[in-house]
Image (cartoon, rainbow, N blue to C red; front, top):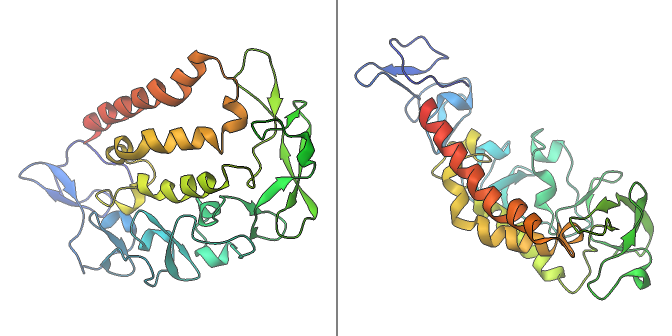
Length: 259
């Protein structure tokens, strides 16, 4: 939906024009609707504008759930709530696959089996004291399932932000920071504020300042540990701190012109 800075009549994208302030507004709760964007903040469309539901409640897609939840097997669930070995298919999330991997406790789904997986290095002895495995950029890193000890996973070897040109494999889920892995996945939902529209849950700038700093600090130690290991100072400042704050400011200013 494209929102205009002002309107003059109720003809734009099935929205209602408040001619007093010349702004578009959504339909009221329980009114007939055909799409989510017609409903107000805190509501979704299912024939009528209905209030978003909480954890454990019935849903068809993630947009029916509160913004800090996902939909799985017709139930609203928290981020990181599924243990490895549980199935996450397109049908189980109502066809809305965005962020579905973050239903899993380690944020990873095996593309072959559609199961949540906990990965550990196939050659654990290759890991250094920080728990990382050095590799050659462009090659594949080998992992095995922590539950079955079968080697069946490959991930890309990625270049880090260090000044030596060293590349590393993404961190194993079974390292000393395994509990932090789970924390950062569960915290991901905390970034999505319920004061934003259900369709804007992933890009609403008003939610970002509250938990982004802590979230990104933990993310740097786990999901992005292999990229930030031995990173030069400017990389940390630009890619973790000031860049994020600058991006938020730019988004907020841009939205001020839209609305």
